[in-house]
Structures are given as C-alpha cells and as structure tokens.
Image (tube, rainbow, N blue to C red):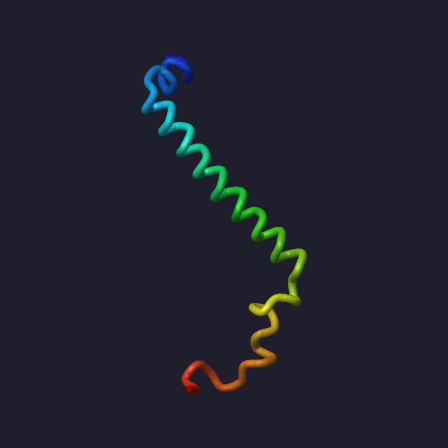
Length: 61
C-alpha cells in the first residue's frame, strides 16, 4: 500500500496526519529555536546570572 492510499483515502485520516505532522513540526522547530537562542545569548539571560543576585534562597518573605 502506498502512502496516498493509506493516509489520504478518507478525510479524517488525512486530517489526523496533517495535524499530527504539524504538531510534531511545531515541537521540533520550537525546541531547535530555543537551543539556538540559548546558545547565542549564553551568559546574558536570567537563568545564567541569577546566582549573582539571589543570595539566601527561596524561603524569604
């Protein structure tokens, strides 16, 4: 069986394939862009410099 006859024969299987591929693409693209952003801005983000400004811990109020 070919891909066309398996996925695109009925409308609901085509929609499921399109939405599944779109969801997978979004997750992959977002994680890749986050890694690129973090590598490009290493040392300038709050998660990298937080230890310089937070002393005691999280129990202060």
